[in-house]
Length: 295
Image (cartoon, rainbow, N blue to C red; front, side, top):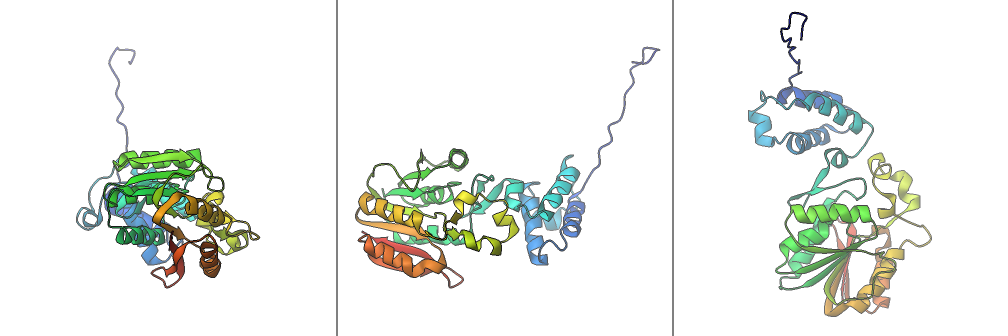
């Protein structure tokens, strides 16, 4: 109030940003951070996951006003990307198998190669009422995708990280599927139940490989979900194979994502654990990426 008793009002100045400006600022701010095609892909993700504008909107609604938070958010995104922080952690989500999954630094970012693993399982298991276990579930992307795609499947998933399980629980709720989640270490899993399918994408990168990796992976994603000792690179696979040999029913199937360096060792390990029809399967780049076997 003024001394005269009149109410004094102040106009709040808000910097308005339109979609076109946001796109141009992102493009200029990310120049040199990545190849032009990758920068364009990043911009599409930001527009869709932060501002809810798809590719059609980006073409037809460039003069649309963005929310008040847009200018600061764009600056923040550029700064974090220039520090090589993964875009998926910045926007809080990643696309996998046609769905959006929440991701945090507690979980690995889902990869396209792992989508191939999910597709392989779906293609090879057309039956219904299958019992499935995902070991080391992280964000839950494998378990949830299988729960959505397989007919009337019962899907369990385990992880040693409570923070990862919390993310997986949120993703299962958001995508409206039932997945039973358990806190358990892959190296010492709980007494066996009986499953038709066991799948795992465990840590498999040797510590000696770390220095050759991109900063956005080695500096931000959880090391415990990525790396294994150089002197025991198959440590998780040994435990998984032993558990699966006890827990898979007759004709049960084991599916693994693997380190291409150890494809021959993986075949030998599965043979030694009594599995049949052991296969090493290439990914879309022609690299040995998956192992599959039957009891």
